[in-house]
Image (cartoon, rainbow, N blue to C red; front, side, top):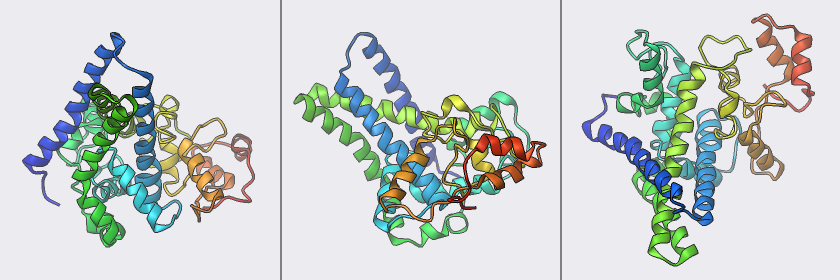
Length: 318
């Protein structure tokens, strides 16, 4: 696809700046005790719904097809992910698949190490590009027909993709309405919009973008991969397990990113729960033996690794 238009750049800049300014305002208001428990509950609920839309929906289901769901639920995840305001569903999936096809090399939309032209980037410039800068140059540029043909040919997904602007409106209107219903006042609607809308968008954005930036720069590694992906433990809970990013790059189709017992992965727990009630099937998991084989190249012993992974492979896939 061609270069980003001026209108697209302005829209993305607004999506970065407006939630940031709103968060500063909210912090000032919080300092003066101008926030209620209802505001925080609305914000937390909207955070979970839209973050799950990204981690379980956009990422593990639609990008990597690490499990299957009924089509109606697939569309529901596409709607929730769109309400995180990270771009239309087809564009998001295409960009992420392109990232995996060219990780940390020329063609990666948001590597902190290598720019689109193949030149190496400095530390600060690279981290800025991977975190937010790429939104002004590369976001949505991956060829949909090449990287997301399955979604592009799905009429329902194309409809959701076209309705992105409406879903952005809804992601702001819902917390405002919730604030009004709880308090019965215009002020309650306003603070619901502030905390459950704009501040929540800020946090979902920056947690997600930290996986692009921090998790390709700082952290730990234990598998043999041809990239700079890392695991970052302190991001695990806010990212719902996405920050076990090195594990993910080692086994991109795995529905489980937290592969050790002490690597919390709320998204994987959600998928397992869906599986138990029949809403998810063909869930892809990586056996301890296969994990050990990939780690052996990096010099670990199979015995040590099996002791770390600790679980039987009888119900694992991949």
